[in-house]
Image 1 (cartoon, helix red, strand yellow):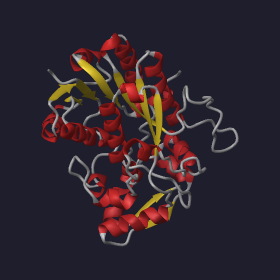
Image 2 (cartoon, helix red, strand yellow):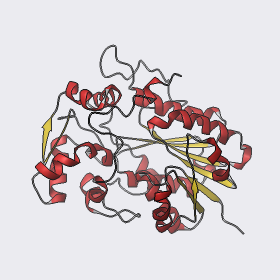
Image 3 (tube, one colour):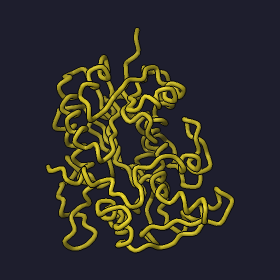
Image 4 (cartoon, rainbow, N blue to C red):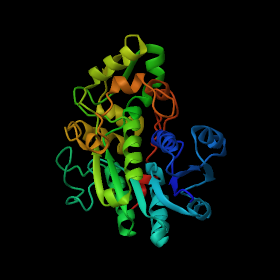
Length: 326
């Protein structure tokens, strides 16, 4: 009897690589990894992908082959690809009963059918709407729900691995990083925990997890001084945090990222959710442990820190996506 096929979109991403390795270790699924760039195909095969297929959310001609025979989908997409995800969700819905389960990556605060969704609520300051990035995550969830798909959603806190990627140069050369978070405490989540939760949900199946929405966080909220101390201990050198104004941060990375960081300063992301423990029976990974231990894909968080990053100083990575209308 052939194994069910799971399609992993964004398979070369931080969560995707870890999920691929975890599912391969288990052996329940035939793991089909999506590959946007042919240069990454070999590394995905080495991680354990049974099949590697070309897939591009911006090119619908790649979708049918990727979906052939698939019964479960891990769905993740970068904000600039929101429009493609919305169309792909419709295509998944047209597959009918073939798609038995979709696990979607989302963000804490992107509430759809689990709460009253109002973009003017949960604001950082008077007159400020919910950050555009959260609105995008909400639309990403809603597109799958509206397509009538059996969905499980992981609503994650801010990723540990995204936190300092824009500061790799100064961390390496001068031993410091900067952002506007200051003393605000956030329970940053390890991407390997997100992958572990996704694997658990896919393996336990839709019967147990369909229409369930899980908030994933780290084990404790941390300030930037505490993050600097953990990073310094992992690197065996002095690392310091330098406070930055929100205005300067916005000039560096654009208004969409700045409004989300403003949201991180208001306390909504300091809470620690029990959902990861309830799913896996394990305590969430602490930042220092994330940096110093290997995940299923063989990398430590510290090794991963120096790899590619969507956000680059002096560029607004969200400029195109911000123009998308509901």
